[in-house]
Length: 532
Picture (tube, rainbow, N blue to C red):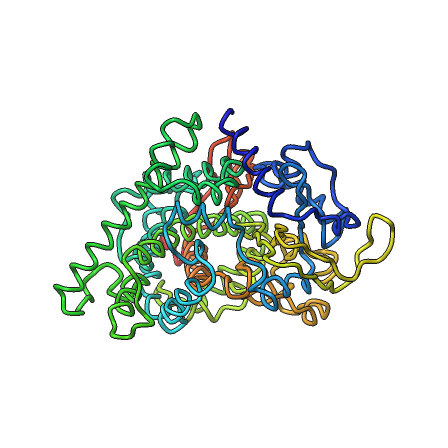
């Protein structure tokens, strides 16, 4: 607790020295502060924060003033014109917050989510071809094989109708997708430990959200070696846990990288017998870096950083959204049955290719609707590097009851983009925006068609937008479609009697009695009196 107090004092000095007093936000409506020290930050970041986020969107409008640490003012935004300015038109002004960049650098190393400016643009330019649609289609047979293995393993747990923790099943599958398709490595022998470590890392980082705000200052005044030694003397168990988990994550990625370097040297580029068949994202990146083109060069530490963030970010978010999808299909058995019929119609002797899977309109609608309603991360943050203004698609009503058509944003202001709020904005999605309705994708409302939603994934903010939009969204879509198609073809899913409570974290997570789990009743589908 003493360290938290010291950290907040540092934040007070740093933020109030560099950040101008945001009087310009005094006319923007928002909730009262919980207290002076934390403002609304604990409510915004709480694992129980669903009601707070819903209240923001329904009571205050598309631009909301939030109270942050020690009297600072932040903004919460989901107006599509304002988001377009933040993420696209003035992307150079709205950078990731310094504290988030610093934390990501310490956790992952130099990578897409820990760098900015020219370094970020260079890395993104190198990685874009690696994540191209043609490259991803080449890895689709590996993804299909993992999905079929997941189905076969699940079948061994089923008698007539069995209750199964589908979060564990889908989390293990997601880890293997990232392992084989992303890193060219299988986690089959230690997936339980790897999944546990990643979950613990996620929630430890979330619980340290207040001390993390002091990182930019500490990284400027203290050398890395001293910072690491000081951790032992700081009475924050989560900080010690985070350090140990980061060390473990980095060691795993470093070992994989060294093995791949050795394999590339020995196999003379014949990698067809290797995990991932030499088509995985890391191998493709290493080949690009090994070329003679200077603009494609990356250090080993940068490659490790990209591997770390791919493993960490891709596994948990993918498993979470697939869990949501299966839960909704269990809640809507009629949609589940129609989807099963659509899938079996293109199945040949029980086998499915990704080309067939990607052609299914109901499957596409089911996945899009799940990604719309349940984005794994419900907010993303940016920080204004200079004074600017945000134009609004529709005016908001200020504290003095006057219309506000644009909001002046002083330099230093943190802006929280409401991803979930934008995906459920009733003014563009319609009055049923909070309902799970895959059929909406067959005829999108004109209000949505005409809105310039700046997401990289059509009309959705789930994968954010602009130059920092999720580079792996097509990979995530391919994994999700493949997994749902094969599991729904082979099994019938229904709800368990146990109460499932979803918690907010860096990504969402289902829980039962405080433990991460998604129990579901699962039954095999019978085709021609033969188990599928």
